Image 1 (tube, rainbow, N blue to C red):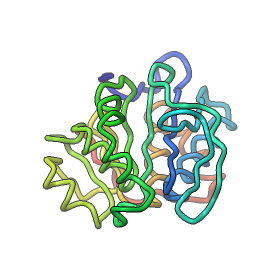
Image 2: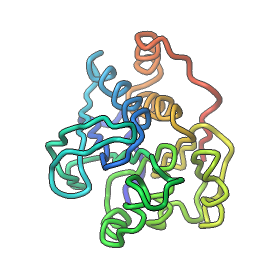
Image 3: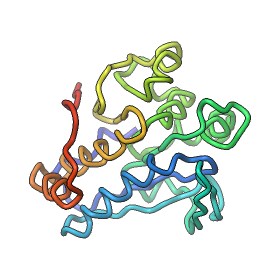
Length: 209
């Protein structure tokens, strides 16, 4: 696994892939997408690509939003893979549980080089792949007990940065996770510019190892 999200001094654009799947929570992916897109629009060297777990196709998000995703997941083309959550409480419906129950996908995820970034119950997908075991991490409040039971060292923070693993709490924390990625790669001024445009103030302190 990579040493971590590239810092501000690193050369080259930050390449982020945003995993999309049936049942994904709209805010979980839309918040980070807005932040990262705004960071790119304000002059930072960044790409963000929505990807499916397999072949390109249409996905339907939790509240019925249909999205055509033109790219399949290609770990070699990313520095960061951001995994949103959705549908964790519904064990039989669409959402993260279908990823958790897919051993082939989990094996690919565990072996991938891009830095994994989990938002909300997307962290439980990382947990199922063994990525959070023994690591400081967080997730939605309703899933923290499960995360701990699976070996994660749960931190009660909105954003937890353990170097080559970044995790965020519930739903709207994806905005703060993405702002932290912008700050870590491009610096505080870049993140502050995005905050100003979005009229959003981050909550809490980023927990860093």
